[in-house]
View (cartoon, rainbow, N blue to C red):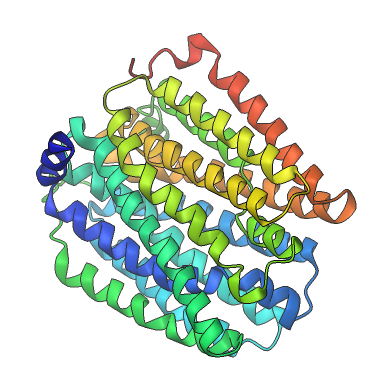
Amino acid sequence: MKTARGTLQKIPAGIWVLGFVSMLMDVSSEMIHSLLPLFMVLTLGTSISLVGLIEGAAESTALIVKMFSGVFSDYLGKRKSLTIFGYAMSMLTKPLFAVASSIGIVFTARLLDRVGKGIRDAPRDALIADIVPEYQRGAAFGLRQALDTVGAFLGPLLAVGLMLLWANDFRRVFWVAVIPGLMAVALLFFGIHEPEHRQEERRTNPIQRQNLKRLSRQYWWVVSIGAAFTLARFSEAFLVLRAQQRGVPVAFVPLVMVAMSLAYAVSAYPFGKLADRMSRRTLLALGLIVLIAADMVLAINGQWGVVLAGVVLWGIHMGMTQGLMSAMVADTAPADLRGTAFGFFNLLSGLAMLIASVLAGLLWNQVGASFTFYAGAAFCVVALAGLAWQPAMRFIKA
């Protein structure tokens, strides 16, 4: 415990600020997102396959936009301004959910919200790598992810409380979600000082051929494995729908996201710190095994307790792998191309997320919920086989 406290004290203050910014924005976002699948299905009469398409399009849009924002941050040599713009854009979309009278407005708001996320995330991750020493990257990314995920379970908790207080009034809850979003943007604006970057006399396009050649074979293998992981893990909206399918009262369904996020938050920093000390390939493999277990449990046609167990395993998998993948991208990319590197990583992951979520929605409608989760487990096995290919993965720190 003493060692853990000492490590936390050594992490630069900017990482803590970015973590709390992420936490506040996730409170705002998850108050909406934990209820949004139910709002679309119960209030707007949307089909589950369309929910899968919207969620896949939204999440993949965020990941694809990250490519362009990362490249632009490398070109400018600045990260903070783009990060602020992205957070502000996401915050400004929140009122659209509260006034939405059709699925088209929800779809537009969801896309714009995720465009904001796409704009901010790659420059923010590159900023973390700029701020923190190399030997602390796993811990720093894990800490930011842990604080982010604290917001991801506080948001649904607030949503549950307000839904009970206001008799399942989705729109009033969505209005309250605007407040923590405003707080996040203000904290980022006043709380972060960007490190000085050495400016080249002449700026060059980061995605010119000669620059892309500097992204190593090891980096591209990290990108490939990241895409495989995303393909094996579709949108978390299906966790919410699985709980509702098992008869959980509407007001309590957001507790699914609370459970997942709590498991994620508790595990993210310890596993991030562990990633600085052990074989990253081994840790990634263990994360995939946990996801297989989560899919198999969720596939069981069980009651609330069974669903809860699967959701907790899903959260532990996220805690084991998400910060670790970010640290691996930072490790294998040149310092002046980190934004571009995170951008390409998220582009491939975004395409995989779109495919996975659309496929999950179709399988759910055509074959059933259980088969959707069995398919996720099958994709995990494929990703695990790719990870086990020793010649391609020997660069990962032992």
